[in-house]
Each structure stands twice: as structure tokens, then as C-alpha cells.
Amino acid sequence: MPRRKAPEDLSVEELRRLLIEKRRGARRERLEHYKRTGRVADVEPESIAPVVDTLEGSSDQPQVQERSVRMVCEAFRESRSNLVVPSYQMRRGHPWLVARLLWDELLKLKSPMSPRDFLNTHQAKIHYVNVDDPGILADLDTPEDYLMSKPQYSG
Image 1 (cartoon, one colour):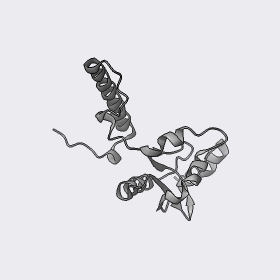
Image 2 (tube, helix red, strand yellow):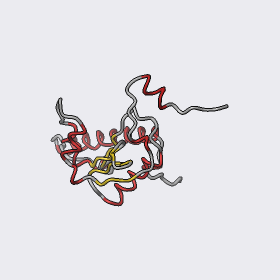
Image 3 (cartoon, helix red, strand yellow):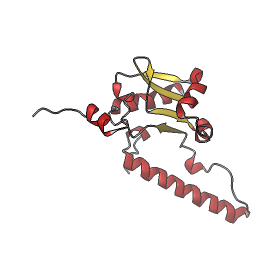
């Protein structure tokens, strides 16, 4: 039987499949609980218990280095902080890691509140990871931004 990969070693497609399997398992557990007891289970099924955090990233930041993402994940595992954020030259960036404990608060943000406000609220609890990657700060909102940041290849 092949050895299971650590979550940080999985590809995006492998992570997606794993989450789908966990959700299906959770549904099965809730259905089995209902069949046994006649009551709807409002508890966290064991099959999704390992999902304890999420990496919050932005699709308009394609230049983030894989090493930076791994450093954030490692810092989360080692520090067990509820909030781990990468920093480049004393400026915080993306992606940041949020423990499940804070998901509800983050997901319940209403306009005009933003994730920045969430980070400001929890500023004292943030574990910063210094990375040598200006890509964590990049913000590509327009085609012009993309063209300015696109790597230039000489051939």
C-alpha cells in the first residue's frame, strides 16, 4: 500500500479530491447517525476533523513562490498560532493561514468590512513568517498590472 502524502505535499487537484472525499464521508456519517438515532447530527464528523485550517490566497497574486506557501504551512504547524501571515520587508501579504476556530468570524464579515479589517482585529495574535518573496505583496487587478509583472524571457 503506498504511503500517504502529507497535506502540504499534495497538488491542488489531490487536495480538491481529498476534500470531496471528506465531505462525502461526513454526509455518510450524518446519515448513519440519523438511521441509528432518528436525530439529525449537529456535530463535527470524524472524517472532517483533520480539516483544521485553511490557506487564504488571492487569485490575483500568481507570482507567490511555492517556498513561501510551504513556509507559512510549516510555521502554522510549528507555532500552532490561529493566524499565520507571510511578511516581506515588514509588509504582510498572501497567502495567510487561518485556523478553523476563526472561520466563522472571517466568513461573517459584512461590507464594508474586509479581510484586512479581520487581520487588523487580530493583529496581536498574528504569527508572521519572514519570506524573501515580493510576490506575496503583488496585486494584479488589471491587464496592465499583469503585463508589468509578467516575467520577461530572453531567447
